[in-house]
Each structure stands twice: as structure tokens, then as C-alpha cells.
Image (cartoon, rainbow, N blue to C red; front, side, top):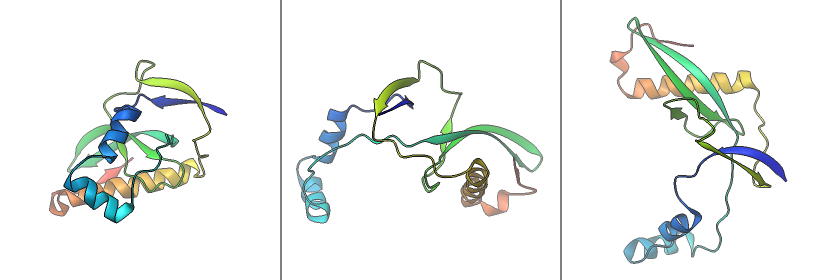
Amino acid sequence: MVRIRSLKPNVTREQAILQFSSTGIPRMFRNVAFGRLRSVAELYLPFRLFQVTIINRGASQHQLVALDSVTGTLDPFQFDHVPTDADVISLDTRNCPRAHLEDAVIKELLIAKLRRLLYSRGFFRMRALEIH
């Protein structure tokens, strides 16, 4: 088993199971589309944390953003502050894949994702966009 630090969960295991095994029409559609819920497992994905500076129209904005370091396909996660010891837990688990991406690759993916996100909010609002 590997010892990791993880953000504290937002929901308990029981709340997650209850959400995925709801009753009524949503349950019927989920069962038809995916079948009955058979098992639930906790999975911990490694992320890399970046301090990002976005310059648009001469205005500078600082953000703390994380991106998964397994494949880089998940959406970026934004933090208000660097997670403190009160925000994280330490645990032993086997359900943690290894980080496969190099820091340089993750950085390129993050910049591309942030650029796409900013352009989706309004392409014509972007002038002299820089992301560092």
C-alpha cells in the first residue's frame, strides 16, 4: 500500500452510494443505461498544483490551479488557497495510479485548457492574452 495525502472528501461513501442508487424515474433511467450499481470504490488521482498568472488586456490575475498528472484529461481544479493540513488527510491505499506525465507536459496541457476555458467565456474579450 502507498501512503498518500488527499483533500478531505466532500461527501461520505454512504452519501455517494445513496446518490447513485436513487429511487424513482432517475433510478430507472440509470439502470436501463448503465445497469444496477454493483460496487463502489474510492480512487485517488495524483494532481500537480500550479500558481498561474493570466494577463488579459493588461490586467493581471493570479490563480492556484491543479491538473491530474495521470493523463491530464480531467478539468482543471481551482483552489482559493494552498491546501493546509486542515484541508487534507493522510491514508494508506492501493487505489492510487502513478503519475505518468512529466511536469513540462502537464504545464503545456494546463495552459491549453485554461486558454480554451477563457476563450469559451468570450473570444472577443481576449486581448494580448498571456498565461504564465
